[in-house]
Length: 269
Image (cartoon, rainbow, N blue to C red; front, side):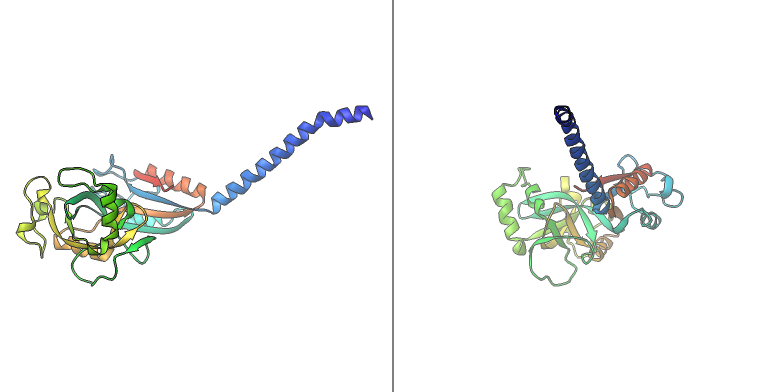
């Protein structure tokens, strides 16, 4: 009996270790299974190093090439639809803009989206707005913290909070960066709105906010944005694509395929 007791005492740590290992492996397998069922968001743009024009390779090659401006062609979008695990795809129109609120301003990238389809979480509404030619914007919560005054001083936290609370009444002005220098003055915008020097090539016109959303982006309804750009004789270009993919391994495969083709891929946290 003493020998048996000694034997059991000797193997007890081993048994405990095996049980712990089995439990750990079970957790890892469960987590791996959960990751393969989870949905992931990735953002795809043309890599800055490639934006001067390139021949895409791999599954995005041949006729699916990017334009020199970094625009996504219809062929590339179709090829993205065949990525493994793809659940949803959003094509975003993009434009570089300048936004003014009172004495504050900021440069930003504006995204044209399908408001009924793109997953925005609105945290504050500016109320109903009448349809018209005036551009209407939805801005992320972080937008107001990026503003600076005419001297380049960043906005205070208190003032940013005040502007956010008053979005329904703010006088907003929007300009496409360099639009006047490239294409002339847009319809409905007077010569006096064109500034001299610095940001002077930008043509400012009245705009308004629709609301504030989670995140940092700045958005406009896709159709309205295309009409706004058309006023200045400019095309509406898809320069960013966001994908929702199911499964961690599918995300890795998609990222490898897209990066091989010369795209920049950012995985949302």
